[in-house]
Amino acid sequence: MNHMSDNNNRVDVTLVGLGSMGAELARAFVRAGHRTTVWNRTGAKGAALAAEGAVHELSIVDAVAASPLVITCLTTYEATVAALEPARLEGRTLITLNSGTPGGARRTAEWAAERGAAYLDGAVKNVPAAVGAPDTLLCYSGDKAVFDRYEETLRVLGGQTVHLGEEIDLAALYEYAVGGTLLPALLGFFQAAALVTGRGLPASSLVPYTVSWLQMIGSVLPSLAREIDSGSYGEPASSLGLFHEGIAHDEEVGRESGIDVSWLAPMHDLLRRAVAEGHAGDSISVLTELLRSATPA
Ligand SMILES: NC(=O)c1ccc[n+]([C@@H]2O[C@H](COP(=O)([O-])OP(=O)(O)OC[C@H]3O[C@@H](n4cnc5c(N)ncnc54)[C@H](OP(=O)(O)O)[C@@H]3O)[C@@H](O)[C@H]2O)c1
Image (tube, rainbow, N blue to C red):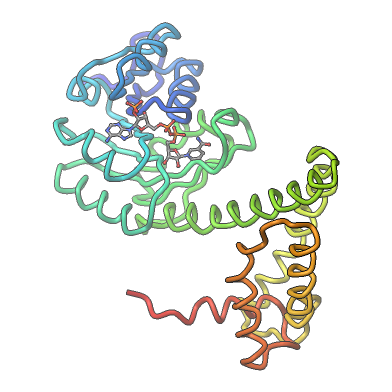
């Protein structure tokens, strides 16, 4: 079977799922000259992509049959499996680009293998507007030979196209692990915004300072990771006790400003537990040990 378009040697691609992210992925392939077939549960989104040069299939069976490489960008693994169920995946390469859990990636890999498809799990670590940019990161895991076959094609979606390893759930693991910083960081910003807007100052006045602060946090991650990897917490740049002292400030600012700081309570509990266990003089990175202590299922 000829998997290439007539007028160039680029791989034909089918993109399943045209939400905010999937539509940008499809556009990137169209722009790069790939014959791009698209399918979406709600057909209107496919029609919009057809107007930009994609081939819109109303049937998932026909969409999957159209290309050797099938990339999905639905909300979850479960939605992906449900949408692909009627299609014949045998001989295709399936790459999923949704958020989810490592367990979800493993279950999807088993499901794909039962249907005779090669499978890579993937994750987009950026926003839809960044798709196709040289510094946009996408992570993949699974069979390296499959990744190598399609690496050049996948690079259309972002210049930082990385294979994390052969274990199928590594992309989901890193996607979840890295993404875990997002909500606490954003809540920290929203608390700051509540604080300054409560004083009649605009949230935008915070932005340059918060951005510097986030860069500072980024700059200390390598040394914190070294402490965690070596298990040596005894020479702290920032001791856990210092963060423990800050609990009183959080509570006082909450009281005097009338802002809700209750989302900090589980973090305060963790700091108190660490101090009770004798870690006040250790690096703040010792919290990793407490977080690791839950028994896995
Ligand atoms: N948006 C971002 O900033 C961003 C960034 C990084 C990663 N991601 C990840 O990318 C994935 C897609 O995100 P998104 O922002 O594109 O979401 P979205 O705009 O909400 O789109 C969701 C897509 O999934 C489809 N879908 C959901 N359930 C389905 C089902 N049961 N059967 C068939 N189709 C179904 C929707 O189809 P309909 O159009 O018919 O509803 C739509 O195409 C998510 O896993 C998300 O975490 C998103």
